Image (tube, rainbow, N blue to C red; front, side, top):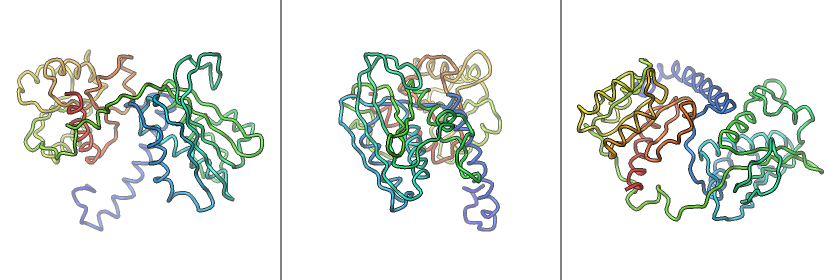
Length: 349
């Protein structure tokens, strides 16, 4: 309604508080899913230096003038392999926690380096030997109390008074790190402040990024009249996503199960894309349907949607040709997903 009646100011006054409340609820749910390691992730190689630079620009307007940020990034051929959006969320949460610990101002510093763990190393647990990217976030604030050091990763635990904190920031960071097969530790500095260290798996950077492929330029999406198969078992969600696809210019055929979609798809030779939920009723889930379709028709764009981690369906990794879109999403996120899928297919050619 907000999108369709954006010119009705009186209606917007009623809609906007409801939308804000819903988004807050979705954010809390997402953070709890993160803590329980059930959030959907799309891991990829990350240019950590560029991410820190971009994050600093994002945060500059949210920090008071008496707080400065310093970045010390050691360039390396190894880059962290994680979900870039979730990592940025984690870094922003840590910066805001550091800001709150420095009411009179101070300094926040990021230090990154690649390390090879070969000997016994203990953080929140024993670290598995391998290559990692180490990200240290230090501040000159008040540090953590003994109780906070014991309980800081628990959902809804907060040391902030008068309901100032949700108690989900550090638990979200913890869940993201563990779901990414990483490690985390928190230490108070000897003099003042605290340091939070993230250890994320790292891999050698590829010479060519999918998104930098010459065929993946910012071309306009030519989707008008193209056919999309939508698979979603929740009728309310299916109705909303169907309308979003129609508003983007697609023709849509929808179904509630992967088995029915598998029967329909051979009858749709002009199928342009599949948009499918991951968790579906029956013996076939969305990932298995996408794998089958990709083998049959590897030029079909495939976007998987989920509010949960795909690891619930097994540990088999998602094909890099598929794009994973987290619920809930609006039409802008769906449009971007189609745009990114076009770039991804161009890069895989």
